Length: 618
Image (cartoon, rainbow, N blue to C red; front, top):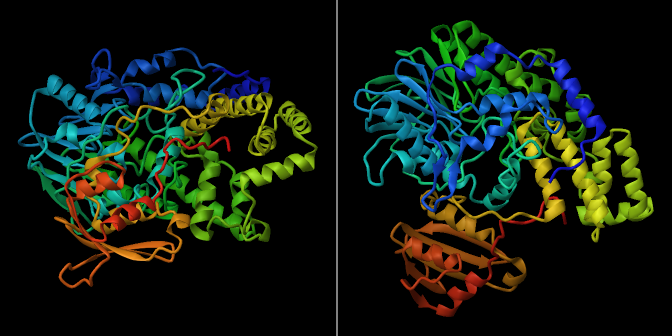
């Protein structure tokens, strides 16, 4: 639903066009170089007939930049939309814009070595089919997963058959983070990811145009296969299907477990997601642990020193390559320095006494960002990354007493509304702010009206219009998506999407018993658990765990079942049967010994989580 484009928004976007040189023939050629095949006409189809992916979703990008999109983002979105199979060099290819990430294919002695098989089985299978149809059919001889984010391994089921003995290489501690990182906070993270990636937005100049490091997430299903080999600092040189790999670990930068690698026979450096064609996130808005900007810069520099003189092409797990040694050298210096700049300058400002609310506003863009388009904020946002650095070193608290225990939004909104003279007066002040092109203050004012409760249709529409104009100016694809998602929620409520592929049951099944039970424990409702004190012994083929409920707290630990004291109830079942019952489904194959009613009471103490909670409204 389009909102009015404020005149100031048109002027802002026009100034971006004048300030930046966006029509770079070098970059445009780099994004198109080596293309040898298109994705299938009609897109990638799921088994239910729906589309997992279709490049035609972004056909609107062939037009000139409209007033509703920042010109820097429009140019970046056009380059990201160049899809198909690309030859990087002899023996190395990439499938791009068939999902959010790239899939890299390397010719081994006996088959294809696949790097990062995308998010969904449908997109990964389609990418592999395109390679086979274009380059000749071969089996998959090995798979590498560069890091722990699902858009790089969710499609494993599309390239590796169930039960196959295909070697799968991952960075050290991959399973710890891939399986557990998103589980404890998973529901909240998943909900915010829907807004970050614009999954509920329409495609088009008033909606989703880009995701920064890729277009958007494929709308398919995930399939996991267990890794067989871990790569660590102790494995710098590995021969995979007769192709030599030189690894450099990047764990703690863009992901908690990540590697980069160099192909000496091909003179190709793969920087995984440590380098992209845009500034990355030091704290992803969907929610995650803060990343280490200082380490990030050092890993890039180490790769430059170790591999730079031998590199003819640099590829990433997103966006397009960098060609030629000179180009690679400059690219890596600038990628290194944007993270070092944000790190050092944020700490400089903080050590002058600035807080987390001030460093983002105070940190100015470095001069080289006007020419080095690949470090601009088409994904990560400079102001947001500054706050991330502050948070990593000092936490989210800014040291001021008023922020020790701030009012929640609803309570604060009611007080602001009363103090400022009611809704009508606040909306007048907001309109004055809009007229003065002070959109952040206008949004702050009307947001208080909305969260005070019973906001009028006028108030919601005004805040939606403000959010849309903030989106229309955003250089970051995900900043745009979050603003547009907020506007959509204000106008139409939360848009519930079909639950296709959101949870990877195969991956969840790899959780340790303790991680799995810790994820269940966060659902314990303290009101229902008041006065409860009991133990539950869970026996599964994978192991035995003792769960205690006391003091409105649930704690689980794995035990030797022969040495455990008598529990109040003993439950014997397969893990899948237990998970079904714990999720509210029927499961007949469960044996109970002891207080059988206690097992049901234990389950009833836990909440269920709704993925579709509200964000932009109370």
